[in-house]
Length: 304
Image (tube, rainbow, N blue to C red; front, side):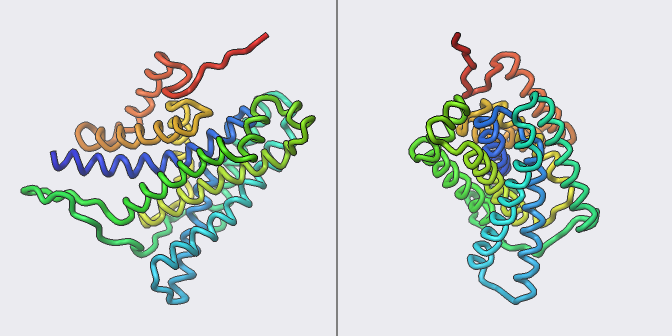
């Protein structure tokens, strides 16, 4: 029971990070109906920005952990949002009126470009940082096994819950959220009613990139090491989480991320760790066969 509780904590932590990235996928798909396959590499770029910021703070002899985390989050969100804006301007906006295949190929090309750019500028080796948050709270001191939740795990889970609630409120209650929903339904009619469609889409890309930046900082703090290839697998799993929960649904993206994190954690703990990715995508296939719209997604009904 103690071992299972520890795996539950680990799975929730991993799933929270997947959920943050998946929300970015969902927001972009909800407003333009296309998948931003460069989103995982935006997350990777944010992790490298976080490593650089932590290194600068260490050289400046900054020892306050709250100050360091706040500074790194602000820097990472700022630069990563700029990357998200650039991806929208270069890979999506010029092709918005074309077929769906053209922006998809463009986004994959942007993903490869970001991977190779980071590899050339930062090197192919992993980039470690010293531990930022050590220790935690002991929940259960069972015979032969201690259940502990680390400070970094608590930070990830609390941050994810707060951001999930904040973005849900923004989409459902604010004027910008109404503009997003209007662009999702009919961009032409939204522009005729005074909505700046280009600005709304660009800002949505920037918000998705900001969520990826937070996830990048959390991954850097949690694992303490990054490399130029982490964005590919994390992006594929976050996209899987968005599809599993229901593409276009923010709660669905978070639910899908948590489910994938729990599946990976328990599968690796009790069965075969090397096949945890196979289990994740296999369960996705089963869900899509039984419920193609995802767990919380709604089937699209075209009214004539």
